[in-house]
Picture: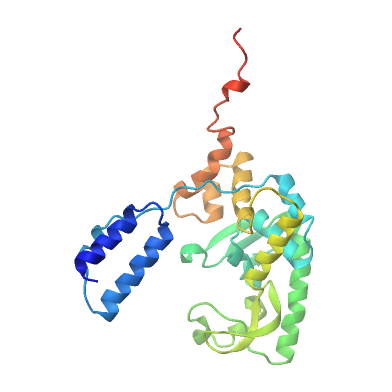
Length: 278
C-alpha cells in the first residue's frame, strides 16, 4: 500500500460512520507503526487527516435508593470499597491502590496519589466509613505482620522509589489498604510479592450486586463516581469544588454532571404536562 492508497484508506475511515472512533485510531496506529518503524517511511501529511471524535455521552447516574439496593447485595471488603467509591468519588484503581500513609483519620481526608494525569488530590473520608475502614486496616496490619515475619518482599513502589529507597516497600506506611489475601508474581519484574486486590475481582463483585439488585440501568464501579459528582451538585455544591474532588483538569469535564439541574430535558416541561388554556 503506497502513500496515496493509505491516504485514501484513512480518509475513508474518517468519513465512514459505521466505523467507530476506536477502530479508526487502531487502524491509524497500526499503519503509523508499519510505515515509521518497519518500512522507515515518514508520512508528513498524516496530521492533516480528519480524525473522528467520540460523541458526547451522558453518564449513567444512580439514585440513592438504587445505590442502597446495590449495597444491600454486597458484604465484606467489596461493600466497603463500593461505599468508598460512592462516598469519595475515587476511581476504581485509585481505591484499589490506596496506601496506609494516604489515609488521615484525624483530618478525615484521603490523599489520592498519581491519579489520572499523574496528579495528586485530596478527597473527603466520610464519617460513616471511618470505623469500617479502621477495621479493614486492622486486617491489613495482620497480613503485614505475617509478611514481615516471613521476610517476604515488600510491596511495589511507584516510579523509581524502589531503587531510591530499597527498604520502603517493607514499611507499614507504604502497605496496601486493600491487600490481596495471597502473593503473586509481578509480571514486569518477576518478583513474588503481595499486591492490592485485583481490580477485576472488585468489578465482578459490583456486577453481581447490580444484577442481584435487579436494576434496569447499566451500572459499573465507575457509576459510583458519576453518582458522587451528580449528588454533590444536587446538594448545592459548586462545580469548581466538585471538579477539585474529582481531579478534572478542565471544568468542562465536570459540567456534564450539571445536567441534573435541568431535569426533564433541559428543564423544559412537556406540553402534555402544561395546564390547558381551555
